Image (cartoon, rainbow, N blue to C red; front, side, top):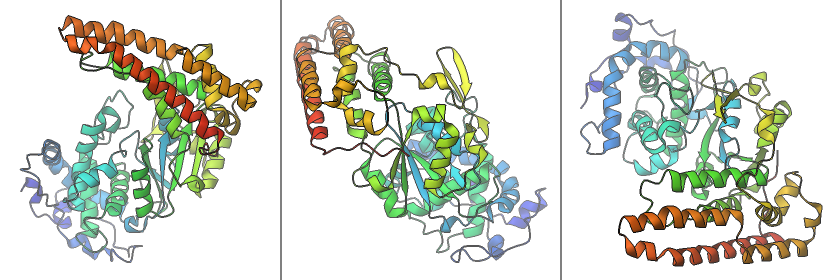
Length: 480
């Protein structure tokens, strides 16, 4: 057992210099009882201190390192957290992205809203996978361990505590976070309100612990929780509905031409530039990027009524009107802070092309297609015709006719597009040539087969997509 397990009551903390907790008030939750529980010990018993699991080792080290500082902060955290009704928080929404379409920007507009709690960047993305992987941990152990898990799985974008984070200025102090967890333990202990193994409880208490780390008072004791699911995943979406039956889904979308261009560029970076072993196996980013966007534009299966798309361009060109509509749909009051792009109250600074900005940037709303040629663009127009029409993006009017779209797709199956030619050149120049230099002759000789295989898969992808859309089997999400 770590040093964390030393018994320490709230009066002990106050005597060490912290301010005593405010006078006890009844909890809003019938499950949690009143604050006579302040006499409970502050310490949180964790049973993974000697675990061989590297993530749990890192979590135990973080907890141990900051425990003395956290202990002194507990009385102040009690004063903040006692007004939250954590077990009664039953409203949730999640944000997903359609390629690079401003999902973090959208979350940043919610940051300062007093009726909303949202964890910044992708710090909440792995909350559900974490619960599945570490089911045996108690609620309190989960809350102690999750920051280490998020950091290990998501890197900078999921790091709770990293200062000077290149993904944004959103670090919370570890001592403040662990003090918030300890304060929640003082309030709820091991009572029925915690339901120690429940995924729903972890989700609720994680958001409240984070709010406590920021010393954020409960203006609304049951705020809406917004987290980043980020990637389209039906299993995770339905798990959220199991826990919060009225959950809502927000999907950021973008002009399909810009979305394809940007997402294709990102895949080329991930799979070629950032690939540590180019000779290990062949990559086809063009196929992956197209498959992603064609499979995500309808949102989660069966959840259309509780799903809305938010256009990337609207967040930059008409942010106030967009956020007013979104606030109404989510059932929260519109606040002027919804025009401020912040993470933990600090400006969310975006840097690209040698420029830096915060919040809305009209130049970002311009259509981009540097990685696409005319044939690429026409293929996108043809395959995603309904997206352009229903999401109100401009497209060539001659493509209103189904026969014209079918002809374009036929041409695209016969003649590789620019995105495919770039992919082919990279496979030959970077991967096959690298395999030869490393004397991996079997891998090098497989290159022609890989190119033929992916070309056939690309043809199948385009033809099946246009057929499904022409028959009405796939419908793009409704814009807010």
